[in-house]
Image (cartoon, rainbow, N blue to C red):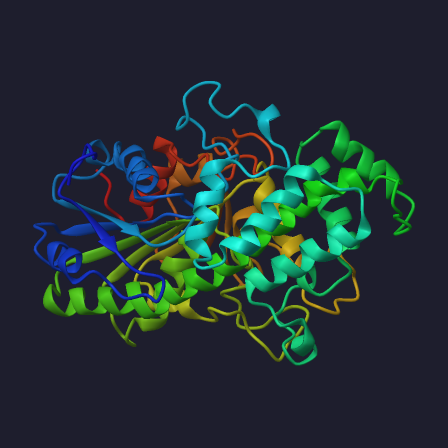
Length: 433
C-alpha cells in the first residue's frame, strides 16, 4: 500500500463490531514473512493519521532485525478518534496546534469526528457545541450539558446502582465533575485564566454558585465530553480485539503455522492487542511477543488477584501466559492522559475515595507498568536495551527517557515514534542481530 516506507505492508481493517475486511485479511495471509509486526493504533481521527503513525514507527525495523528474519508489517485500522486539539509530536506542522489554542469550543475536525462516533446525534452535538462556545454562567446549563453527555455516552444513570461499572463521572453531580476535571486540567498544564479561576473558586469545597466561577468550569465540561468519547472507544477497543483481531490471528496462524506474530499497541490499541489474547487457543505459540506502548487500560489487568479484592482477578487475568514470549509494558511519567485523566475517569460510581482523591486501583498500565503480577521485573529503558528483556512473562519498561514530549492536555501520551521503542519490540520478539 502507498504511504509507507517499509514492506510488505498491509492495513488490516475492522469495523466497530470487530468484523474484518476479508480482503485485507487475505493480503496478510499472502505475506512472504517469517515474522509479522501487528500494530494497533490508539485514538486517531482517521486512516491517514494511523498510516502516518505506522510509517514513522516501522521505519527503523529493517536495520534492527537479524539476517534470518523477514519482516511483514500490519497496521490495524479500527474506528477510533481523537480530539484534534491533542498534539501528536512531529505530526502536525510547527505552530499548527499551538498549546494556547486549547479552549472550550469544539474545533471543526473534532466536531466531525464526534458525529462519526455518535451518528444520528447531530441535534445533541449542536447543543453541546453551542454550550461550550457560549460558556453560560448558569448551573442549569451545566445540568443540561451533563444530561446531553450521558445520553451520547449511552449511560443509564437510573440503573447505575446495579451497573457499578458506570464511571462516577456520569453519575455524580455535574458541577462537581466539571470542577474535578478543571483541577485535573490545571495539573496537566492547561493554565488558562478561566481554568485557574475555576480552581480558585472551588478550592475550598463544592459551594459553586452562579457568579462564583461557574464560567471557568467549561474547560472541565469539555473534558467530560472528551472522556465520554473515550469511554465508548475503551469498550470498542475490547470488542475489536476479542471478536476481531484475536479470531483473525488464529485463522492466519492456522493457515501459516510457521508465521510468528509480534503484537504492538498504543493507548487503546494496547487494549485491542491485549484483548485479542482471549482468542488464542490453549497451547498455541504463534503470538511470540506483545509490546504495549502507553497502554490505556488497568495496570492490574494481568493480575490473578486484585490487591483490593483478593477474590477477583484482572480483566486479562493470566492471559500473558498465552504469549510464547514476553508481554512488555512501556510506561512514562510524562503521560498526562494516563497519569491524570485515566484514573479520574475510571473511578466507579459510589467509590468512597470521591472524585478528587487518589486511589491506585484505577491506575493505567501506561503510567506505571504492570502491577500485582508476582515476579514481573521493572526495567529502565537503558537496561532493557543493553541487557534485553525476559524470555517470557510480564515486564515493565520505564520509557520516560524518550516518551516525554507533548502539550496539554495529554502530555507525552502520543510521543512513541522512537528507535529505542522499536528496539524494545525487536528484543521482546528475539528478532535482533
